[in-house]
Image (tube, rainbow, N blue to C red; front, top):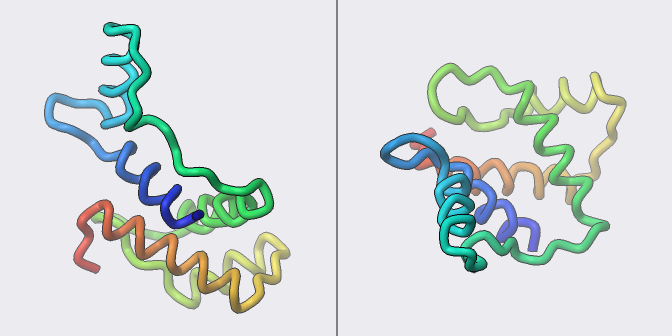
Length: 111
C-alpha cells in the first residue's frame, strides 16, 4: 500500500518537458476541462502507515546528494535516528529502504 502510494507520488513529482511536474500538468488539464483526472487519484494508505511517509521525507531531506538520488545509507539512517530521537524497528527500516528504492526507480537513478 505505502509503496504503491510512494510510486504514484514520485511519478507525479517528475519534471516533464516544457517545465513543471506531471502533477501540475494534470491539475491544469483538470481545471481547463472541468474533469476529474483519474491519474491524480492516489492509492489508499491507512493512516497508521503515514508516519513512515513522514519519516522518509525527514530522512531524504538529510541525504547529501548532488546529482540524482543517492541511496540512503546505513550511516544516513543512523544519523537521522539519532538526531530525531527515533528508534525504528527492523521492519520500519526495511520499509524506509524500500521507499528509497521506489524513489530511485521512479527517478531513473542508476545508483
